[in-house]
Image (spheres, rainbow, N blue to C red):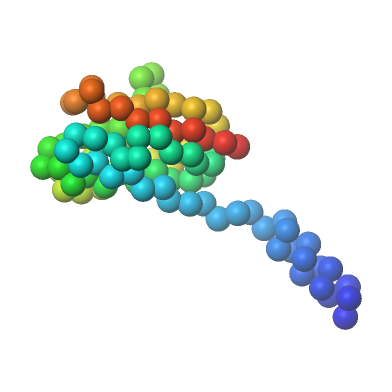
Length: 100
């Protein structure tokens, strides 16, 4: 019986961790929380409670469109810390720290 348990332990240890969804709320022109931590493969989901459209834009990088009273998503593909802002409201700023 012991070899069976060892094989099961190895199978579980070798299984990739499931990706997470990190939620950032937009309310009254503010990203909350302003800074989040994630891993490559995780998805950031912005929930826009405002009546205005927003973006999560990384200068020279990616951009997620976030319609009013809706959601926008971005799956993270690279490690590193990135600062993002709303292209329509540049005073809105956030940060995502992505680990491998």
